[in-house]
Length: 481
Image (cartoon, helix red, strand yellow):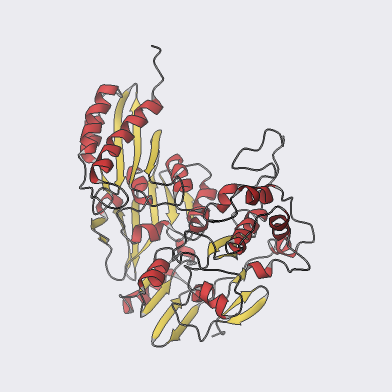
């Protein structure tokens, strides 16, 4: 087998003898690339951002920004990455570096390399372009050059303030014709390497096919399954978790399909949220509402639906939305696969019907979609925060009467749940203030919310009812007084 290595700034660097849990952040710093910083070790600050060459949603290859603090170096075996040092040099600054410098976008400089990598990913985005009318095409979050500031939603700066950073982003033109990283987008990305590493008695494996992964998991049912590593990376960094065996499934072809059929949409469990968002392009409005509120762009560039559901977290944002969409999940093992309604998947706190040896292959959303949908995330910050409460609605209203209602809830019980009583109270009744009030009262009594540092139990309950009242207000024309 070929020696495991990573192409870093154009040079192949062997992964051994790094431990299997070593993050690419620590790996880079151990190899002298100290521009990549550790700020939070949980993917919230972006100081560690790097660029990875991945298959493009548009075009052949795209430069994607990810959090280096969360991803094991072993997951990048055979892959190509760029750090801030690999973009330019003091005597020949990259356009992003130059704009950050001349517009005062850096003071202490700690966050600057991460900002530069995140900004570079947006700089090289294939479909970034100036609007037809520069005077009217820009707003506070989108520049006249087509730059989407949400590309930097996972990057924090404590001292500079964001205006000069925004000025730098909005001043960037298109990449030059001879820009080597722009030209790199026309060539295929490196295929995922089949990896089999062992260090200090611990193993890290990336099988080539789903069948191989299932057989490996059957032999090692205690193995940790990793796709985006946005959850496992936090466990490794902040809780000191170590696994005897890790199986990476992030590049398995069978888990990366997206199919829109006549009766359903199937989303591969290892597609990143960014890939799903861009490929669906609004085809599922409820998911389109979810994605911008799910953590940050840096996280969404790695996180997967399979991982979000696989952790079984009661506060994961995807589960309420998928419950409202009446989704099911496909569980696969060495003997075959089975389709399980998501409403029957969770059995307890971080527990599910998934058996040892099984992994999530796909998420299925039945068609047609409900025409009235909404996702309400109640949190302390607009972006990049954990929900206090998450509520997803999917209603079918015919001639003013609710013919079907599905409501998914997160943050109010040991598992994500359906609000069955409120659904029944709405179904078959007029979409009216009186019916909504009855259902809102039932919704407020749903679940067993807790008091914690994010919110009180009473606040969570009240927000459930208020969410339904808000939906009604948003879907009903104002009546003149």
